[in-house]
Structure formats: C-alpha cells, structure tokens
Image 1 (tube, rainbow, N blue to C red):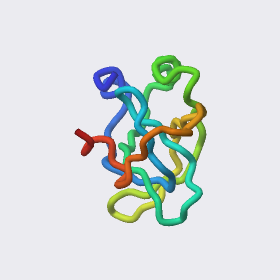
Image 2: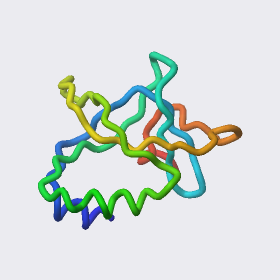
Image 3: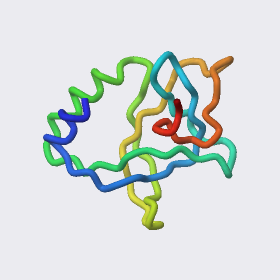
Length: 105
C-alpha cells in the first residue's frame, strides 16, 4: 500500500493527533482522543491524485471511517488532514501507550 500512496502523494513527514492507539491483529487502530495528553503518531501525506482515495478506503475496510481532523507536525504546524478512525469495539484491545505503531515490536 505504501507504493500506491507514494505514486499518488508526497510524504510531508510525521504528525500527531490526539487519541489512543490500540493493537488489533497485526495492525493498529486509532481511537478518537478523550484524554488531553494522549496522542498518536502517523504520517502526513499530500495527495496529488484523488483517485487513490477509493483504493485507500477499500484497503482500510469497514472497520475504519475516514474523517477530517487537525494534526500537528513535528515542527509544530497544524494541518487539516484525513485520518482513518477505528470504529470497531476497542474493549479488551491492548493499548499502545506511546502512540507510535512503528516502534511496536
């Protein structure tokens, strides 16, 4: 999926959003923030080819909903971005306390 995204967008770098990250079976789920200090790290991309949204939405599936939110880059800049929120039940799922899926493992 990274290759598909890279062909249709430009990486802008890491960004953060208020929320919690849960571990599903081999992939993460972003839960909308309810704790002011909790945040989740992700990647910010500038989409150049809008047709990629259909592919991304299909890849994320019914467990996720794409929604517009404000994210903050590592340089402190706020940006409006589309994020995929996990809409399944988070009950009993392990939380990733540091909010960074790439450091799990």
